[in-house]
Each structure stands twice: as structure tokens, then as C-alpha cells.
Length: 400
Image (cartoon, rainbow, N blue to C red; front, side, top):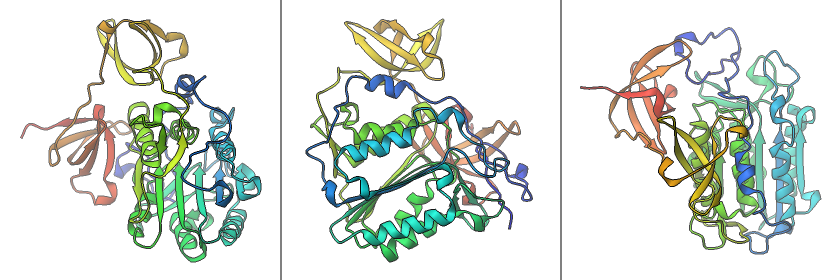
């Protein structure tokens, strides 16, 4: 069986079943504005008031930015410097998790055989009362015929049998995990398949699941999602939505969803099982940010409004970083040039047309849901396997 990897925004007719089409990333540049905003605000050292016992916590993580078969899976050289997956693992270690409780397989170390071996071995070490933190970053692929999703290990080849099935991740968890709870996270194309599995097994597993994308959508090459997780586990005040001094897992998810929607035009996913408390504290904060610092805005420049983020505040003026622009464009602006983001929200059931840039065609569909300026679309004449979240800029409501 050959792999048929979907490309976000490409028409179904364009998908060739006889070749591999690696999910196209919207941008190659790594988002750094999140790190800029947090500079000087994140406390170092362990967090004292987290909702788990570090000595009873285990980490299994896989981070892959280059692959053995580069003709199938493109590497991410721009993401390698100061890689966020490594910094996330270091942040978890800083909470007090013992080093020998952490397995982190990177690039060529993350073959399918080693992933399976180390994952099973890690699960076998976990005892009742323990917590597992799972993380994957890299490429993901989905078979639209069987609806199975796979993560691309380092040696993934041109058939699905050489990949790590998402379903297997959960099957192995259910059969070998003897701990109390798990936090599952993934930053890759089609990572929302983990959300789907969580929803299917929510009565059998006690877990929280955070993913960078919906199961039918591709993801970006930027570190935006992992940076959002990192800010949450480090206790950034910006993640503390209710300003109570604690960062709960639901607040990390909300922060990631907002960042992904605004910066990547992408729908991040979050779910908890029936008995997992979404208010589990993952970090305590150190201080509060200035009101408005870090918020997303639109800034007027030559009679056009551009998306931006507030990275500093001085009196009545705000310093803004424009999304998708170099830092050389950062500037101080007054309140007369700033407004809240104007996002399009179409009602459920609205009839729309969606622009797919790859073949430059409009496709008719129906809005299933809306959130953060994104719209979930069902396309006329296609199964629900083709449902996807699209940006407001690519969808127009029909006059019917």
C-alpha cells in the first residue's frame, strides 16, 4: 500500500494515490515573537505548586526534524536552531522530574523499532499513582480511505507499515500503562487524530490531549504550538487566563488554540477524558504581566489593518510585532492605530464557498462550526473525511 498524504488546501482530485505528497507547511520561518514577549518574565527553577508529584512523573517524547528518506519527508532546517522540543523537555525536567524518568528520542534515534521498544519499556516502569507526559513533534500522515493516522518515525518509508500508527500509541497505552493519568501532546500534521482517539476512549483512559491541528488538517513548520506548551509549563503569566496565579491544563490549551488560530490560521484541539480534571495545575506563575502585553491586535498602516502582537507597553503606546514580518518592522504605535482583531464568524449551517489555492478553485460547502475566526467546513459531494478547518480569508458566505 502506498501512502496518500493530504495537502491542506488542495483539491481531492489533485491527490495522486500512487505517490506521496508530504503535507505542505504554510510558512518556513519559525515564529519567535512568543519568545520575545516572554523574555524576562519567566521564572527559573522548579514550580512549587504544580498539581502532580515530579518524582512520580514520567516523560516519553519524540522530536524529529530530519528523516532518513528525505525524498519522502522534508527536513525542517529552520526549526533546528534552539529547537523548542528540546526546550520543552528541559522545562519539564526543571519542575523536578528525575532525569532517569525522561525518555527523549531525537531524529535518527527515533526509528520505529526504538520508539516501540522505548515506549513499551517506559510504560512498564510506571506504577499506580504516577503521571505520564507524552509528546511528539515531526511529520504526520493520514490515510483518507481507512481514516488511520500515522506519525512519521525517522525511518518511515513509502508504505504505512513503516510508520507509527496513532491507534497503536493508544492501544499500547491501554494495555501497558498502570499509572493514574496521562497528558498527551503532539505538534505535527493530522495530530488531531490523538484527540479523536481520546474522545473514543474517554471512559477507559484518564488523560488530557492537546494537539496542534485537527485530524483532517495539516500543520505548519513553525514552533508556535510547542512554544505555547512551553510557556504554559514554565508558568508564564500570559497563559494564566483567570490571573489566579496558577496555570491549569485547560489554560495551556486555550493559549495554544488562540496562538494557532491567530498566528497559523490553524485549529488546535483539546480534550480531557471523563475523569481527568481540566483544572489540573501544571505551573504556578511568577508575577503578572502589564495589562494588554502579549495580546493580539490589528494595527493600521497606510489605511490597511495588519495582524500583530503587543510585545511591549510604554505609557499609552504599544510596541507591536507584525505577524509574518521581520522584527525590523516592529514599531511603537498609539491607541488610534490599534483595534481588537476583526474576525469573521459564520453561523452553523451557513452555505459557503471555499478557495483552495493549490488548484485555484472554489468549492461549495456548509459551515459546521466556528471558533477564533476559523470555520469547520463540510464540502458538497465529499465524505466527512474531507471536513476541515479553514481560515476566514479563504471562505465566503453565499447569498441564498
